[in-house]
Image (tube, rainbow, N blue to C red; front, side):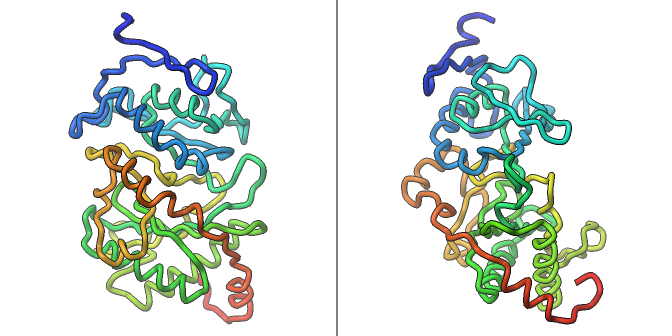
Length: 302
């Protein structure tokens, strides 16, 4: 490569190599790799806390969002010394624990960051997430559905934060106190999803198969499981508009905000205004709900 096609930046005491800074990664908003890395640096104080010490899956687009992509779990060969890894179930995961590692991954055209629900230190889920997945992008009922889930969680005595997935859906996040298992989340999630799909039958479904949804919005409670991952808060997404997974206020949900309103080119301004809407939420215990479910006779599958 010529000097114009490569360079180095000094970050936190290490040297990060940058290649092809002018490569266009998101053609529609005109985001080059250099712009992307600048935006990643700005997002890093908010993104890294949700990625550090997790089993990290990235989605790489070597030629930008309009090109071919692949999911990467195993750390690439030839990685620099500042990139630490964690071996788990036959996979050598990158520990996304610092700005240099984030920029190194960004230089490899990793455009999405999907951490596991558990950390590298144990097998307990750190959050409960309800994924609201519309059949079609742009479903006008999306925020209504998110509001209904939020109301149900509030009725269960739980604090939660909605966030755009950065793609077509919304995810409701409940940070958890220690001591929960994935089986606990399946039990509570199944109860909530079936309750809502029965109460609002024209809006929600728990049917996983698209052909069985009949235009209803899928409440995915089974995705939160050991070894699974989900788009991190503040991760960019490989969508034409360079959208970002953005935590929301419940007021924004009730007003019907569009998920496309949040993208790489305006997230800095939003974060300066609102900060991290997830960071201040107290961790929640599901124990009272689990005790209630144990005492309540339920039908099979509920």
